[in-house]
Image 1 (cartoon, one colour):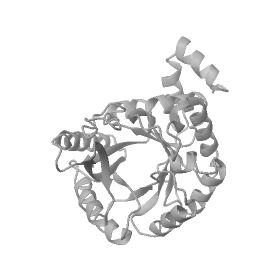
Image 2: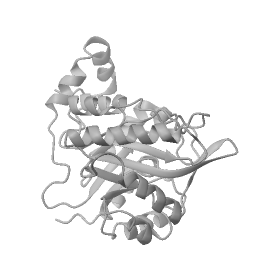
Image 3: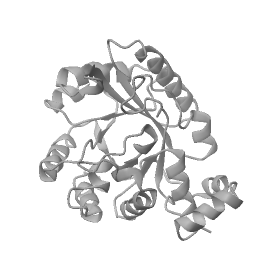
Length: 295
């Protein structure tokens, strides 16, 4: 039986850590895309494991784990929300709380490129690996692929992502690849969100591994989005990005991009979990309303 609160989760972690794997194996799973549906609404919560705790002007917004789990539970209970993207610690808290029944669960794989470090582009697989995703009964794996033409650490990250695509495909599970063209500016890694940059990295991400049969893309909304999405025939999910001071404009951009044929849903974290007005429920419901559910 699921526990009621995080105090009970803590006691299980102390006294019965095997309860986590039992909960994972007993979890009621669902199809990646149920019959009659052509899009996904996923809540992203893998930022803390990369040391990225900021949401808007709140520098440590995601540092309070109880608060974060509370916001995630609100989001996951909303009609139309399909599931979550997260690292093991967050997913396992939610598993023990019974919050992931009949939900899509995507394991975040490479979190080693810690935000603000000199080794940020060296994005090692410090989170889930394909075998753990299979063992824990998760539904897909997600990887971040930042390509910096001036940083040699890009090459091992490319290779690791290609291996992960192959390993997930061998298990018949989707690999969600999030590509960016990145540059270091004044000591910080910045992503190039121009149309040309996204076309280049989408082309690279689409060709990773020995098969693209199970590969999905996770991409930002950028200018000239129609031309950008013509770079690949792979299905794509839109990422939410930073918390916007003009959420109505952000929702409108998402809605326009969701009309493109390869765009099949949203993967959004901070924009919905920490909206400017702090109304998680309304933010999530608004995002869900933008999806062409197809049923």
